[in-house]
Image (tube, helix red, strand yellow):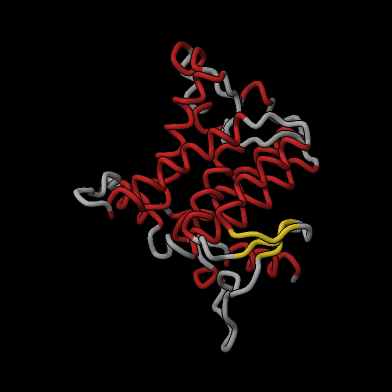
Length: 243
């Protein structure tokens, strides 16, 4: 059945990528159907601290605006680069990947207070793209069939594209800055003379991720995989094509 094929494809996506992307799509769908209002989702420190509307600390990362080009553009990059990170440098390290989300989210929230930013999903996307690009420096990226360049230039190309669309680049700059802080603390500083690793995933987070049923759901648990059929992995070698 068609729904079974769609579900099978969905379950082949790594757990963290699958969960975050689904949460973003469902949140946008709820707003589109007028089940929720953006005013219930945006980050407002006064409402968080005084009215205890703590869900805003999370929901502001899940809403990318109404259905349209901007939404699908953001979802493309969230899905693609989140998945490539999870299947690449975070393979078999779900808790560490969740910790990266938490680290980035907390830092963006604190810095976002300075710029009165209400929705930070685009900043999180920029962070994911930045970390992937720095960990894949030799990968060549084909940008919409117009330009081909090394991966580390991708975050800046996306920021320029966002500027051409008339969007503020402040959110993109925030994501790039937080992504660089994470990359420096995780990949650069520990390898410097006298340096050490400063970011450690708490043991309780490992335990919670290991026990979380959402992260354990897989296609094998739902339907046995036919003999000879393999799940698709990360893209193979060669330039990555964006749209």
